[in-house]
Length: 178
Image (tube, helix red, strand yellow):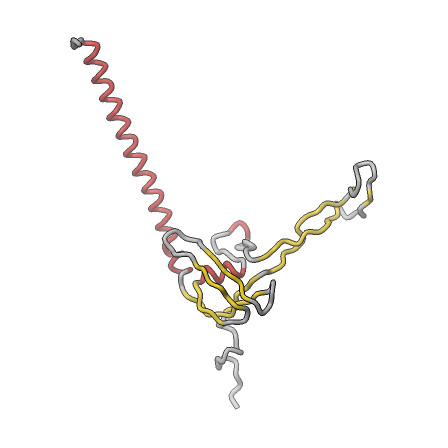
């Protein structure tokens, strides 16, 4: 095929486009890496704080006296916590697991740090604007006007009590000196 001016121009333009695409892709990769690194820089101190071990008593409110398997995976690069815990026993666990068992997350600012893990919702009828519910036969069987079903409370399943304030575990804090 003979080289014509048109072929040469097209080839040069294709090379320029390819170079431009490569530069854009490289910049995009750098931006993504820098955002990821920035996020990890903000998370590092939080991860270090939440990996601190705390000592406390595990509580199984759902089935007192029994064992419960606890599995928590929260941060990238941190191995998951997988342990069978017995009600009333004392354990030394990472802070993020203790917070998970108590339904608290310090990063959940919009929810007042309550994430309601390890609890189940309790549903009940809620009345609209304080009126008595009236059975409505025209809307079908079992329908009520003025009431709807909603989550009214939460029932705790598990909890973790810190030993920092527990005097029954043999600590001398709070004991009277006689």
